[in-house]
Image (spheres, rainbow, N blue to C red):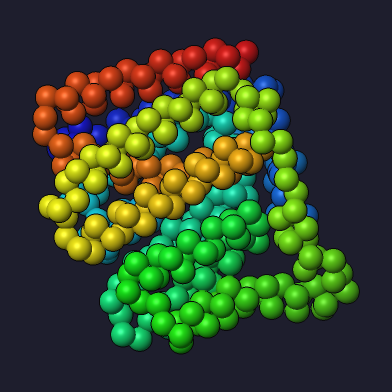
Length: 324
């Protein structure tokens, strides 16, 4: 799978089949709901079910392309571009609940683009422009998923890890983060609806139950446990061969591990946002999983790869039957 040029083709075929099944079989079971909509014009819940699936598929196509570009420009993994994209699509297939359009997926695009600028600031003497754009794009993502704001301190930790944080870049990041909200305030004043400006901050105070078993369904908990196990195995392997990575690659992988660990912690503390946070978790988990299978060559990794594929098939079948 790591070397075959047909990997992405078969992943796309499987994706298409899963979307068709979801369209014709399960459309009445999954109502389309929006947890947060800043502007009512962004609410697509009234659109046809097929149009909603297509909108979400377009976003995932863009995410797959951005993952490839992020990997190539930051030189994280030396693998064929289609392998990373195929792994990501297979992970998405495993979660039928993510097929439906959500504004949090737009924040996913913002998060990945923000990582472009953050990783590009590595040991940059004049890093102010990079951090300005990093936080500006991340701030745009918070307009669609306000809880993303809780992860903002991680970007300053990441800038420190990239050795690009100084006084100028620190305040450049603050200005970049405030810029979209200044534009939002201007828009709110212009339309005489100042309450629009406060909506994202009010949403930040919307806390749900911390009981993960009371909020999440059993199939979703099983899927989350599968991703957690896969993630921690990849992390342990990454730490064991850490000495063999280039310094920049090592720092980037460490930041991805930190980011995904915080997202997992967020899911445990606020399981009501499981779908939004899971979509943010999958790209980093995909990078770590590809790193594990690319850099490991033992018999254990061969057997483990087969076990992972079998488990993904079983989990997918179980989740589809549980939806009836």
